[in-house]
Image 1 (cartoon, each protein chain N blue to C red):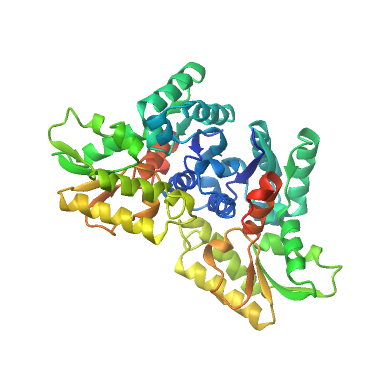
Image 2: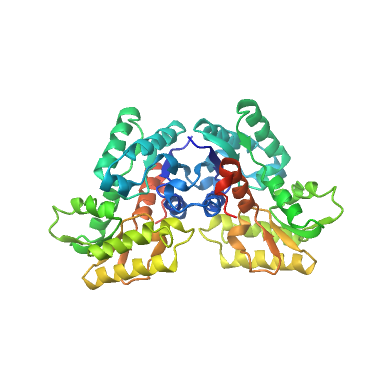
Length: 249
Length: 249
């Protein structure tokens, strides 16, 4: 049996599909059988909202995320990815990683944030101003910022408080939010694009779409700066781990 | 734990994603946690081409399909769907169903063809002429035809031999085929649309997109007849089995 990718979807469900699609899109394959082997769990009923936990406490979503990890490892996943930026906040991610290391020492849990930062630092060897768009949970936990504090050539800028809240609502609003609709609403897309443009006006050379719902609403070419899509970067990292030779250049 | 859907993807990989997306799209949910629970395997390395097996023999893809069924059942799937029409040919499907009944009597294997035929007969209570587009394997096995033989008010028409082969190539060609490209090529889309229009000229009131790759290439509204999408019908049947109340009207 070939090595297989495991994806903990459901956080949110469409972000899970988006990662699976980006794995397939980044694989060199013309026949079904040439595609990589992959399992996805999408069991949102057992994984509480990540931002809500970070802001207000309650049961750690790590418990549900690890339950999914365990199922994926049980059926043969060798490398596991979580397409949710907020789930990479240390109070959540570190807990999942610790459980994984204890029970499945041979199964690798990828870190989407570390993979993204690696790609950014390779892309801008001389440093850059990077804009970050994310949930309030990801901003509050400084999930990306902490990776750039020792790098004076990089500066990470965020929307102002009003902008952060507008992006957060574009993700979560139960009417027009990206999580609430099969495809992103016009209003959510407009808010995301506006905030991206404000970051670009403030000097961002590139933007991190730091919530896995955001690449659903803003595509490359819609704004003038380069967009880093952590979901795509995670997809490529996962392929590299199970079938380096199949990675589309 | 809530009841969960299992999806045997990988046949082909993009058809697997398409079914997952249609499950989410047909679910009433505005928060992550309100979505249904679902697992997908996409392990094409162990499932040989279905059409090739039906036309030329070799290892039955049922073995790999059942291996996926077993994994999905092991981690908690209660109802399992295979988004591949050709895999529903009796020499393949019946074998999977028999193994499933023996080892997992409490786990339901849905039959996409039966679900689709049910919907068609409900839609056209007085009968109709139905066009079928599919792989050569599905045509040769009379997978849909056998469900209409006792129904004189229904007539099932297919493309002529040249048309069948054109559709088959639009699915399988390693250059422009739907299985070979991340999104369907212009050429594949043109062929599929042309053949649909030929069936409509011959009197088809509706068309079955009888290969799970076809709904990727032809959308409702692009031709004048109603399109039956077995993937969408399968998605709705799966939701009905695990969470009837969440089925989008």
